[in-house]
Image 1 (cartoon, rainbow, N blue to C red):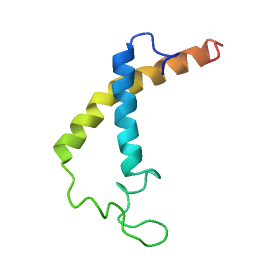
Image 2: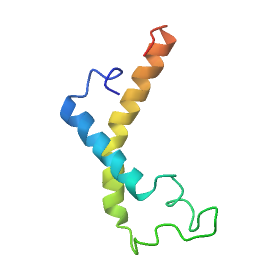
Image 3: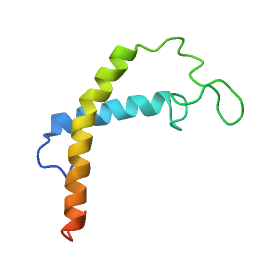
Image 4: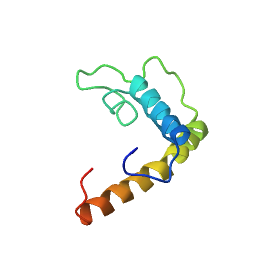
Length: 84
């Protein structure tokens, strides 16, 4: 993201990174929010009895624009023959 998006400052990049790391700590395999059990049949998110969906939406909304912007910049760079 640092090399692909000249529109984000260091503080914005750091905030996105922090939120992604928080998701990773909770759900490192990206399965827990999609499935009630893992591949071994064990419950996912067992230690989290409730999820505040409004808060979750707010967090996702706050990182979606920077992520989409970086994705667009990367795609444009690739189409124009520039490497990352």
